[in-house]
Image 1: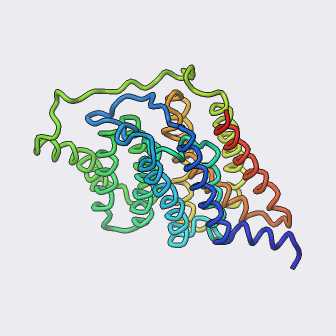
Image 2 (image 1 turned 60 degrees about the vertical axis):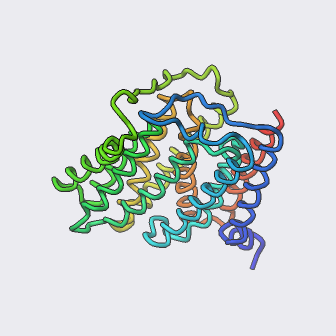
Image 3 (image 1 turned 90 degrees about the vertical axis):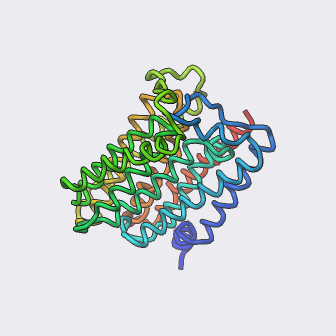
Length: 325
């Protein structure tokens, strides 16, 4: 066995996943120990404060954030084991996701609305994929949109996910009249329950202002450049992978179609709400990692490890820069 095969196998192994988790934990600890914190540029949700305000920067916030990130990464790997949207195992996607998170220590060291959005998307994706061509899917549709409706109480801009999952259920071929009614009931139920118990009232309602496009006065140019390069790389990988993905079976195409819609809409939100770009980065990084996993498994090159190592080196370089400067 030559060295190139050994490196390839290491990059798609559980051992490298464990290394990536270790690096994530170390980066989060160092960032918090050096007094790093994530600026909260957004407003409250429709009824409740952003989760950025739930915990003060520190050990508890860091531990919760790291736990959610690692759980979401392994959940992606588990989803692929169940539904096979990436032809081979998703170990590469898991490590790529963790390394992409490491590149911006602020979103790894503090629990924030971006991490909560990532958890919500991961949980809802499982319920979505499980409905493929299932005749009685109204309950799952209701649960997904109830989850999204409840989350929107804390993060108004997360309502864009309702459009993503509406299209997703159409891709799963289950969105009919009953599904549409279940969607509406799901969105309204959290508000109805909270209002019924006196937790919220119409007087509490507010529509947070989405920051104007290109309003990046308080955003680091390094963060802007990182997002721009990541978006370009993701779109290029998506177009490159598309020719192979269209040869997959219908269920795999539907699952990958969901990630395509999620990627594009998240990029649009990162542009429209640019001052709060960190809110969308974890979900975008998950989408980026899926495309990296496709590219790695589709490639027949003996040196496919080279672009992977280059990506990881860039992530570590950005991490060091962001921590020091």
